[in-house]
Image 1: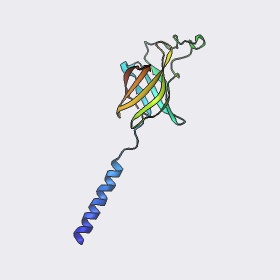
Image 2: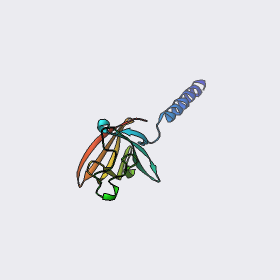
Image 3: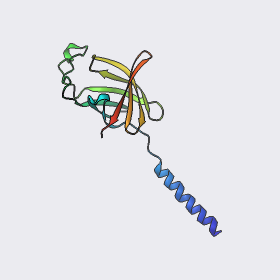
Image 4: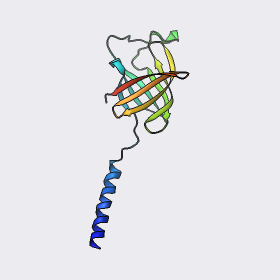
Length: 140
């Protein structure tokens, strides 16, 4: 009887410890350094979706959105542009249904994201079925 109580007590402690160790659903919230260190993007919740805004660009890059397809937007600062938008969960550590803006060509593409690990975000921009991926590194 005493041994049974002891085993139940130990089992309860182990189950409690395991439940506390299970991480909450992974989300890519925070600031990310884009591949090549060209810019930083702050990813946040926008209503029930995820979005991200450019918060820093490397000094040798254009500071304005010079290649935007809309001429009226070509003088707007790069910092502050909503780079990614509309991402919804698509399984564990994956998001789909979003878009990504590319200031290098002024176009917006369909996109998807996946957390490769807690410090690496794979971001893919797609045209039809052809996708180009970048690995972003967590900054904050």
